[in-house]
Image 1 (cartoon, rainbow, N blue to C red):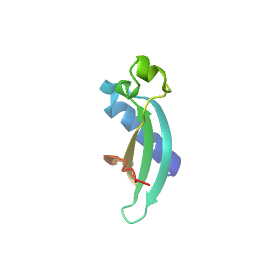
Image 2 (cartoon, one colour):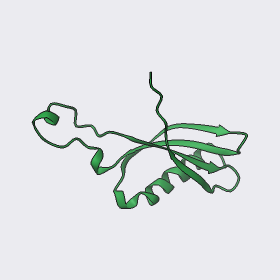
Image 3 (cartoon, helix red, strand yellow):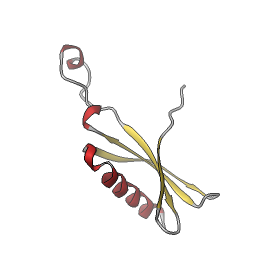
Image 4 (cartoon, rainbow, N blue to C red):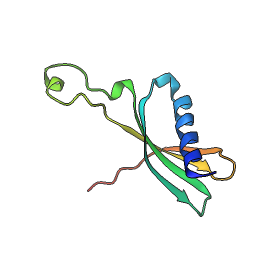
Length: 93
């Protein structure tokens, strides 16, 4: 499985698994091949309805861009099987 196939598989899987939460704005963030585990680690960002700021005086002054959720999908490089989905850890500066 090449990188393009792994990314496609990861996005399709997230769309399906989170369908009831109405995700949108899917975008590729990064891809890493883990040689030791023989998996593609594909990070995908997306938004869900509750990620948008609520309307009101205070939030009306802020940008209306939604927050993003980031998931790391581990895709087996040989079979294409999804091994796991994890929340991407953020590093504090």
